Amino acid sequence: MNPIYNRTAILVGDTAMEALGRARVILFGVGGVGSWCAEGLIRSGVTNLTIVDSDCVAVSNVNRQSMATSLTIGRVKVEALKDKLLEINPSANITAIRSVYCEETSADFDLDGYDYVIDAIDSLKDKSNLILNAAASKAKLFSAMGAAVKIDPTKVQVAEFWSVRGCPLAAAIRKKFRRNNTLPAKKFLCVFDEEILPNIGTVNYALDEPSTGSGSTSKAVTNGTMAHITAIFGFTLSGLVIQDIVSHA
Image 1 (cartoon, rainbow, N blue to C red):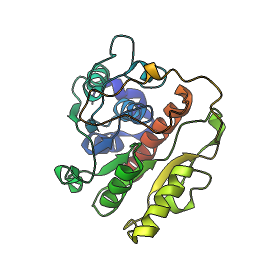
Image 2 (cartoon, helix red, strand yellow):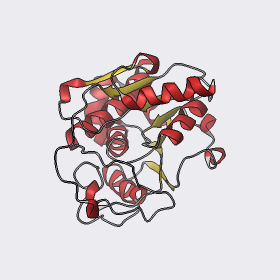
Image 3 (cartoon, rainbow, N blue to C red):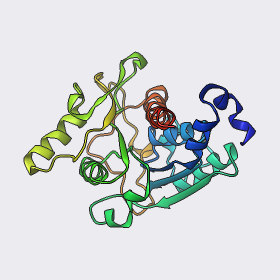
Image 4 (cartoon, helix red, strand yellow):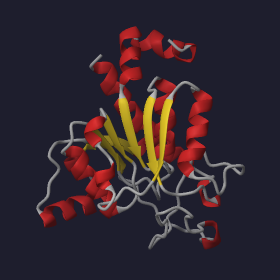
């Protein structure tokens, strides 16, 4: 066993460490939530991880994304994150896919080939599509709801999707599912937070330059975000995966 995981092994045991090393995980979206989720997985013993995102690191990402620094601005996010993850565990099997997950590209991803699917996508349409496809697959799904306009770390919670309350994104997804009469095939846990604060600062849109990737980061509204909230969301997601693996080892 890789000695970097000695402290983890003391807690969970060798059998669980072997299970963590075998697990196949795919993570969609490596922004403020997804990047920390990926780091939490690799630091905890997951060694087979696929990360999917189309964007490049922007100046405005530096306040909250694991791989975003003054040195990585302009780099492809999944490549910058892969480099960081390999610095943590050089023998990890990290597959970086620069792509947008959407209805048109969904067939490119064999979700049945993974044990876990993690949704950290921002787009309502694409997130809804991934949830439906992942819930219909053999993989276990965990999802992050909206992490912006929040500052209180004690308000972050976990609940089954249909029990999430106070989150506009979750409400919008449920409304979309009901309207289209397309419901997820199985239950899944979500990380969410009921806090919704107003944006009171002046937005410098020059800091939110368009993505140079194949997707678009243009948004109708640019919301404020904090590193500690997105990191708590991301680490909670990784913790849910780790807990599930360990509990079934």
